Image 1 (tube, each protein chain N blue to C red):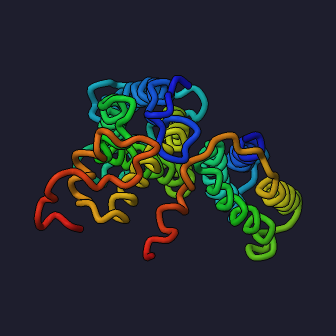
Image 2: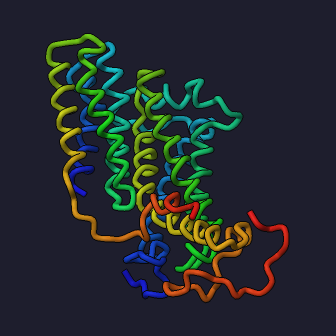
Length: 115
Length: 203
């Protein structure tokens, strides 16, 4: 539970960073959009039955790592994007113990539908 | 968790419809309703000013933006309506409603899940289109997002009920509206002896 929670904190930081650090351009837009969704996925993934939502943050993390190259910005904004991206990607691979069981979970809905 | 074995869905370690799981969701939905209702009253012009501690004129810009008036009713009013549905649909039904009232659980899930994500989309529109933030809108969105995970487990249990009904060739519509056989518990996965099956109701 702490890994997705920490990821959502990163998302909040990413959303606020352009205003706190005072930068604009495409880096600002990218970080605000990615930040809002990273925080959202993180909070949702804190629930055990929706832990899989954290894979959305893997995708967002990969985007953050590639964004400075694709959108062509450098300096401290690129550095921040790389650091948060690498952290988000790493956090999706943290294995947190799952206490509850959910009758097979969401995959049970489409598994062995045709017998 | 006060659930007993009989109220738990098959293969579950707890009962997602227990009151301890639902009461706080209802409480949070009521708070969301109050916040959205306040913002809606401002958008309707019934209240003259709106509380905004951090972002200057941000709330005014966001709440009077063209985007907030895409529909005939201001978006915060619709938000308040959605929170009201959350609270009411969260409250109706007993602690086995995941199997006795699948339709209510799924209505609850739609109001919390997809509609909750709409409020996140509206949040992303704030910097993207308006270059402004609105504190109470953000708070309302946080409330929406916090509700999603804890509400969806119940939806999963109800969808599993429908899946089982389909697998056992039971009338999906009847199960959706009337629920799994009241006698159903952990051991009773296949419910076959229910009297004559209504014709034409097969999915």
